[in-house]
Length: 107
Image 1 (cartoon, one colour):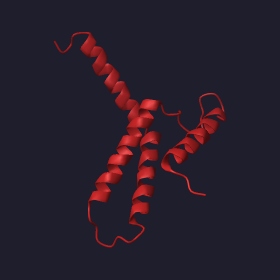
Image 2 (cartoon, helix red, strand yellow):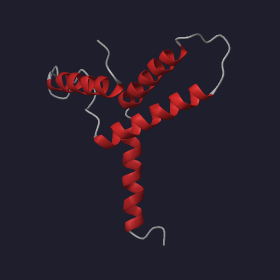
Image 3 (tube, one colour):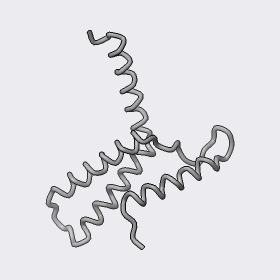
Image 4 (cartoon, helix red, strand yellow):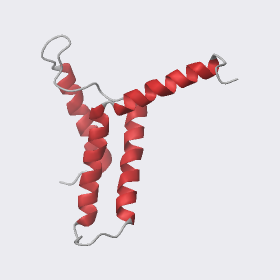
């Protein structure tokens, strides 16, 4: 059975949700929080950019499975972005700058 990227992401999100709900003790989790839709979208965009950038280059020694390798690496990159918490920090930075904008700090 083959899965497309959207199906794999949905399965991972479901499994992540299960792990989060099965935390060991209060404050001690097996895995990080479930990403928001914005974080998910940002990670997907970064993954697509990664795959497009790598796929656009010509590398020596690549074989017929190169596109599958790029896809696997892209998915690992996507997952690492989600797990790192980097997107959460970017969203916090966005909110901070937006608040400062509304407070007139850039006038």
